Length: 425
Image (cartoon, rainbow, N blue to C red; front, top):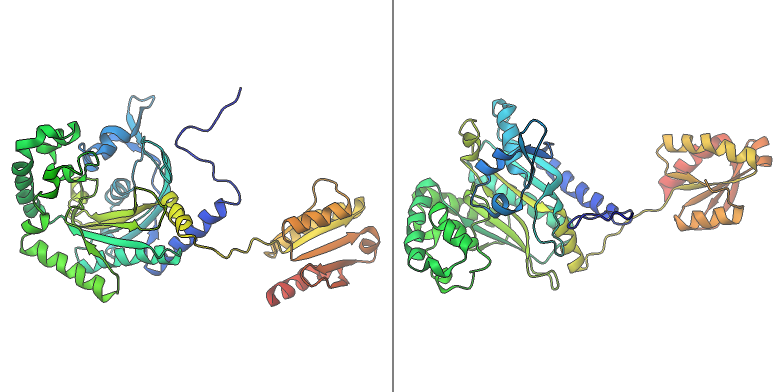
């Protein structure tokens, strides 16, 4: 019986996983320079966490969640996004009591959404995200945007565009909500069922509809920017001024609303303009969520964050033809001749690895010539050849595979000699 991988998932094999590891190092190293610390939350949470905080009107909650009932008759959901779980942890662990505010966190792990699989989009995908909780300073908005742009630049992307908008505070959103209802209500019957149900629940989400994006009313819908009160307008202007000071180009798009209910004030997306990337160009999305912490039972602690799919980032890198210089060469391959020499290389290999030398030996009982071919396949810098005569004389032959130079050295000096030669390369 053959069992295949579930639809919408993928195996990340050696040869590809190294690209993932490199991206993860880039992202985590940049987070470290910005003083963001890693947080790890459960892969599943109580379903209510996402229903109440992501929003019942969102596609995620209505159509895409993997939800199941456990043996205790509790409804649990595989996490479809990271922010709700991080904020839950922030509240539950009383991180708002930390004297160092805002609390700056990042996460990296699998998320799950039941959606139609396509290039760069999977039902199980890896999301890297950042959350800064505890500050309503527009400068932290600019810092979060600067951080993610630094990640993309360090990954080698050039054809990217930052798009920003303001969703305003509660007062601004309420005024805009009423204007949207008045605008769409007369012809709402021409829109899809989802939009019709959103009219009263959350009319802002109509602007995010993919089915009706070409409808004439979409083009003339009231702009949130026309309904910002003085505080919201000033806040958004500050964010823009900081981005300009940081030399981060951006475009304002008043139709950008994002797909989650908890956003307010700053909202943003980063798009790829690389040829061949695909019809869906969004790489990253995020925004401010000032009421989410209190909604979960915590204090009135404002927050902002972003998340991006690692799969989408890798697809953008491929679309731009970014070439990475990787060094996967092995430091030393041990070739043995004879049974005693082969047995001795077990400990010798261990000793090399203890000193941080990337080393390997033969496990297939191959002849010497085949062992050298194996060393070539793994691009070994050095090959150390040990025969039974050399073992009795406490010597070993060391060959530099780049220059072809060979030398016989004391066996107990192999590690120190290799360390010096590798450092010199």
